[in-house]
Image 1 (cartoon, rainbow over the protein chains, first blue to last red):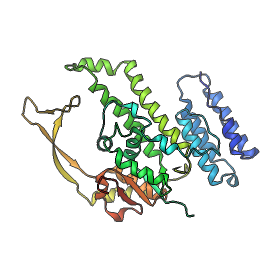
Image 2: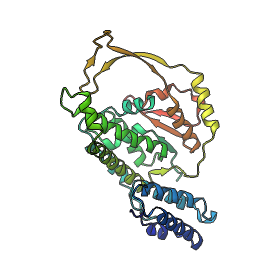
Image 3: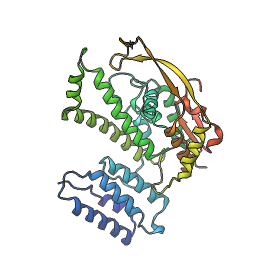
Image 4: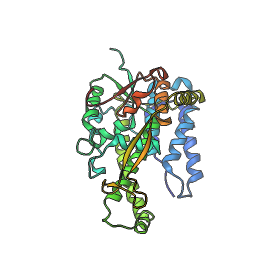
Length: 122
Length: 217
């Protein structure tokens, strides 16, 4: 059995109002209850699907560009199992931290462009 | 102060930058681009299509490296036993997925430099029809390449027919055009890539301006 990601932080940050928050909580509770007894389903995939489906039900006035962007970031993080972050947090150095952040992945220097090219031609 | 233009960034740029100077041949080219982004010249648009390719590419990188790390003379059956083992699958997946998570972590924590594609964006069949019309109107190039050993990169020749090379059809392709047309749909002024093949796409096919990063640029 698995647990879905805790979305309480995301809901607090969104400050969507009672209706939208209730929709999200109801959606997550339903999915957790439905998949709670299986180990096969991917929690990140389901969490993402719930967020995306819930997006469509939110009240338009609550969907400001900032909220839309935040939900997209939260949905993406949930796909890979990363927890939600504060809506106001901005790591301006992340673009620098990204540089060389996965150098440990491979031992040798590689031609990335060629690898992607071959991938697209398969 | 006006908002910087949106730049659709190709998969090869993301991975090269994240691999860094010691592991990517093209790092220095992309480093300049990201310096411009950090100075506010562009905002990077991150599409889920690019991220999907990124994950797939990371898995391929680890998989190809696995063969290079095997002992010389490894047999086909030995390789089959290796790739069919749970340990091999886990090792490849754990490393590549961990790298993917690192990239996602940084991208999603910096909304000033990285903008995610709007989840409500719809792409029409007309977009792919346009891609088909473009491909129908262009014939690429034919090239002859040596056949290289996937383990040690030495050039090979067939012991039966003596052929030591292959003919390859080179052209921009459906995935390339999909990236380009998506960049327009997502409101990007530019599409940045390191793949020179993009420069062959007729300019009339997209509202996004194609920028091919290279040492000369």
